[in-house]
Length: 263
Ligand SMILES: C[S@@+](CC[C@H](N)C(=O)[O-])C[C@H]1O[C@@H](n2cnc3c(N)ncnc32)[C@H](O)[C@@H]1O
Image 1 (cartoon, rainbow, N blue to C red):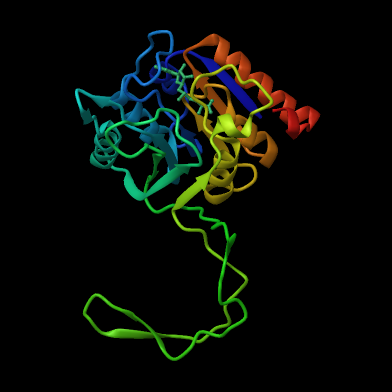
Image 2: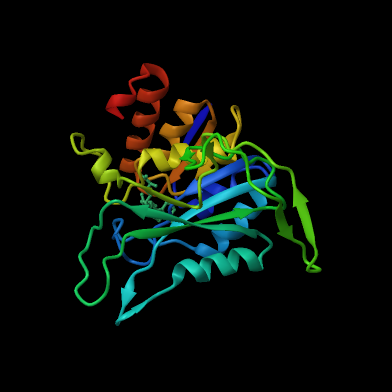
């Protein structure tokens, strides 16, 4: 099932039942980096609504960056993370999306190539399917000697010796192509999309088939495309009707025509 709502996220969220959503993946309109026809959003109200509509154990991945205003980064990203924490979310992890490219060259600092991906949870996350695609250098060897981890009281626990597998769990910095690099030969009519690989990888990590996923700032619908590919139910919201139409079109094409190459 998929549902697409046109309107302010704050209002649309009010129509969604308490404790009904398994996962939210979204990138809000941060600072004034892009002008979405002049729309702005009520962050605090939306944060509360998100807390209400999530199931216990559900997670949010909140993808954000900061603008530079009067020579200083705004740190809106961290202010938002702290607010989420204040109203009861766990800041489960602060992940980094490291881009293979930068959009605006910097003249007096290093080029900015990352965004934060705050993983927030309502209670303990109920789903974590770690992606294991980091090639281990010492594959096939057994761990040597006695491995220990230090406990809080300073004593050590011994760990079993084991054979190192070919692939280990990914780290929490994810590096990859931007949406622009991914879609060189296609045109997605939206100014700030995240790449499909990122949506897909989060979807696999934090949800299972049949879960209900929401993106309250759906834009071109990348989160919806990942849901269509991976059999997750989906609710997408955007204040701009033309983006909702685009998100719906991309979802339908992926779900029913199974033509991944054209999304
Ligand atoms: C960063 S973009 C999301 C892009 C999306 N992740 C993608 O891959 O296409 C943010 C979106 O939020 C929408 N938006 C801005 N203010 C909003 C509001 N108050 N309620 C709902 N949507 C809003 C904008 O129209 C824009 O499409």
